[in-house]
Length: 390
Image (cartoon, rainbow, N blue to C red; front, top):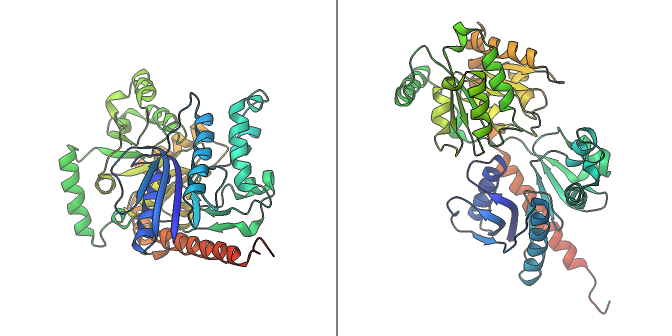
C-alpha cells in the first residue's frame, strides 16, 4: 500500500514525533510505501521512506498550518496514496493519531470570550472539527481515554470511530531482570555522569516544559527541606526553550540543583538507569509515555492524575498520583514522600514487574493492523463506487 503520514514539525525528541518514527518505519518493514509530509524536518532522515517538505510560509502558526493542509491536499491530488494518516489535526485525513488534547475543551473552559473571537481560535477549531465532527469519517487512534469524552461532547463524534491503542514504550527502557546487573549498570552510568552516592537524581523528561509542569517541579524543589534538597539534582531533558526556567531556578535560589538539557539527549535509557525518581506534574497530558518508561526502569514516579497513563502508577503501586484540581502544596508533600518514603523499594519493584507485561510494548503492532484494515476498507469502497455511466 501507499501510505502518507502528515506532521507539522518533526524533531527527534517529541513524543508524537517518536511515535511517527516507529509507525512509519514499521510500515516500511511490512512492505508498504511510506511518504511523510511536513513543514520542517530536524533530525536524520528515516531509512526507506520519502519526506516531502511543504513549501509554505506564514507569520502565524495557525496560518502556516492551514497552508500546509492546502499544500498536502494539492500534492495528494497529483500523486494519490491509499491512506492519509495525520499526527496533527487537519482537514483531509483518513486516520488521525490522537496524541493531543481537545482544543475546544481548553478554549471553552480555560480561555476567555475574547480568545474565541481571534483568528487563531477559529483556525484550530476548524481543524479539529474537520477530524471529529459527526459524519466526517476520519478514523481516530487514541492513546488514552482522557479526552475522548470531550471530543464526543463538543463534536458528536461517533463512538465507533475511536480505536484505543495500548502503550508502546521501547524495550530498552526496561530494567535488567537481574538485580546485580541493574546495580552494576546504575553505578557505571552514575560514575560517568559524575554523580555521588548521596545524590538523588530526579528526572523531568519531555518536550514542552510549560505544558508538562516544569514550573511546578521547580517550586516543589524550592519547598523541600534543606537537608533533603541539598542532595537532589534535577535533570530537565527535552526539546524546548529552557531560558524562562533557568531564570526561574535562579530567582528561587536552586539553579545549582538543576541541569537543563534543552536540546534533548539520546541516552534516556542510561538516565533512567541512573535515576532515583521521575516526575510529571502536567497541566495537560494525553498520555505521558515517560511515566511508563520510568516505571519499567525501576524508578518511583510522581504524576498528576490528568496524565493519561497516571492510572498505571496507581494500578501497579509504583509511585504517587497527585490529584486534580492541582494544589501546589499537595504536590510538594507528594514529592517529599516520593524521595523519602520507606515504600520506595516496593514502588521500584512494582514498576519492574510491570515491564513483564507485553501489552505495554504493542502500540505499533496494533496501530499498523488498524491502518491496514482502514486502507483495505477504503479501497473496497472505491471498487464498489458506481462508474460515471452507472
